[in-house]
Image 1 (cartoon, rainbow over the protein chains, first blue to last red):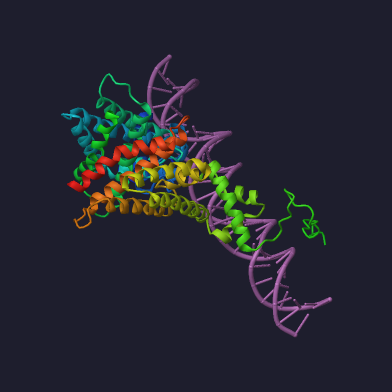
Image 2 (cartoon, rainbow over the protein chains, first blue to last red; image 1 turned 90 degrees about the vertical axis):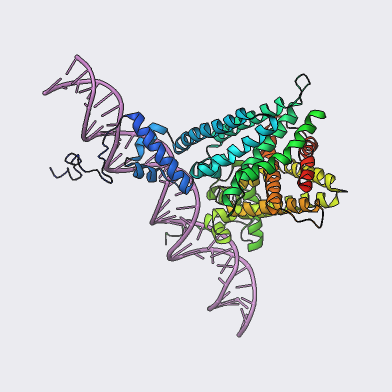
Amino acid sequence: MTSTTHGPAQQGPTEGPTQGSPKRRRDRAAREREILEAAEQIFGKRGYQATSMDDIAAQVGVSKPLIYQYYGSKDGLFLACLARLRGQLLDTVSDAVIAASDAEDALYTGFVAWFQFLDDHPQAWSVLVDEGMLSAGPAAEATDEVRAAFIELIATMVRMNLPAGRPVDDDEVQIVAQSISGATERLAIWRTRSTTPPTPEKVARTLKDLLWQGLHTLKST
Amino acid sequence: MTSTTHGPAQQGPTEGPTQGSPKRRRDRAAREREILEAAEQIFGKRGYQATSMDDIAAQVGVSKPLIYQYYGSKDGLFLACLARLRGQLLDTVSDAVIAASDAEDALYTGFVAWFQFLDDHPQAWSVLVDEGMLSAGPAAEATDEVRAAFIELIATMVRMNLPAGRPVDDDEVQIVAQSISGATERLAIWRTRSTTPPTPEKVARTLKDLLWQGLHTLKST
DNA sequence: GCTGGAACTTACTCCCAGTAAGTTACTCGG
DNA sequence: CCGAGTAACTTACTGGGAGTAAGTTCCAGC
């Protein structure tokens, strides 16, 4: 038969299509991990819009429908990238906050951890914020979740800083938490775009100084 | 000839295709305005991604290439929407700031004006922020410009609040301005999504209280 | 070996941004 | 009134990318 033009059967196991590894069939979990890594890398480099599923498929050396089978949609894949980063970032900041000696220090070290993490993972950052954390993309709900987690962390810190027995104005706590979240996000974006950004410590210190007094005002109102 | 099947010539001037107005040819300026209005409306309702050029063309009652001839691209059209809103919003806030009696009042009334404007123009808001002001969209550069204008306004205010002769740490001014910009944007988004958002005055007051003390700290460092 | 299912592919469809090339209607000089 | 020039506008397409239907290949366990 002349129909066997593509003949995938005879491909020697000693030579893969692009790299040295033949990497024929892998089990699902391994393949998923592989795809996720490629996606994170390409999304990080080119952004969500500019990345096509074919690009990712090609990078992994697999066909597009497989990715759809595992991740459902482009959004789904992007979401999966996001979830991983979100966990890392949240853990890093939480740890810093918990390890702090007092409230003022928690604020400062929390900020430092945030900016430092983003310095250390520039690629992650692109994925998370530059396209992901904005409210519009298709992954809006997921990024909202990420943000909500941070806001909850901040709100908790704020509340802990208030006198225990006093009734708390939840609106005010929310306003403050949203403000801080917005400020840190914008500062992060600004830093990545600045040619000579100030150190994480400098930014954290200035931001802490800007907010610290006002946080007390809250409690004395 | 059987070729004259579509025969657009005999369409009576008393009856348009969709509405009462025949609205055949209009001069360029008028048509551009018409397109811009439709675009603002549809972008505002459905968002940038979910809006197709065909949608807008259909709404105006015109064919797609005409829009391309006038606005160049989807981004170009979106940009044009943005430019208009940016002007209005910036003017509104600037006016409020200028009319204020002192620096503290300027901060407060500036915030009020910002949130009030977005309450009054919810559709504009969707266009500007929910898809536009984020950093990722195709209109990234334009939205950056809009933001940069606000940040400049804020930075000017901050500087004016500092002692005249003293050397200013530009980094710190930038950090503060970026923070305020980020906080107001996030608060705006939060308000639109909240079922019962606090009044503009309440948000402005809380935010002012949060920042006011810290702004003084800046100068005494 | 044979069969059942998991891993994986080819070959599409549809949708949408953007374009090439043409057609219609208004205007202005004669 | 008439032709020619041009601005306003259209039909009919290309190209690329998301998502899918219908297989095909390989391995596990009987």
